[in-house]
Image (cartoon, rainbow, N blue to C red; front, side, top):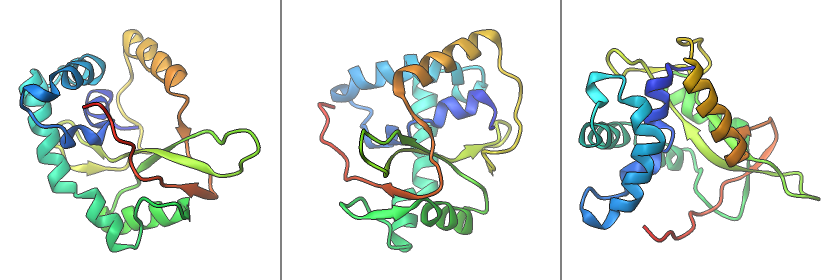
Length: 172
């Protein structure tokens, strides 16, 4: 896995969709407390402004939505295969992403994509495989990761069909 400090900074790629003005302040506060304070171990991300600023830069650089659209993958009511995502992202970025899904609901066999992680080196923010071993987590980070996993119910997507739904409208 990617170094924890960088991975936490980029877990929620939707950060870039929120403006840095006052309107998004409650959302930014939540995201900073949840992910940014972990990422603050790095000088380049050691403040809320640096954290969100770097997230925006990386989001624009990656342009995940455009890359997926280039391969005909768009949020819709259609099902895709998890390999469609992995193949497209690996082909363009040259690294293996981590794609997480919500578990299937009772009676369904299709997972729902919840999050796509692209991992970066902490030295220079170059893309790297999310499957590479990274630095060891501190006990505090292990506890945090366990809590997050328990509350979000996400897991790495299994091979097979996946649903990539259009985003829901949020209050932010």
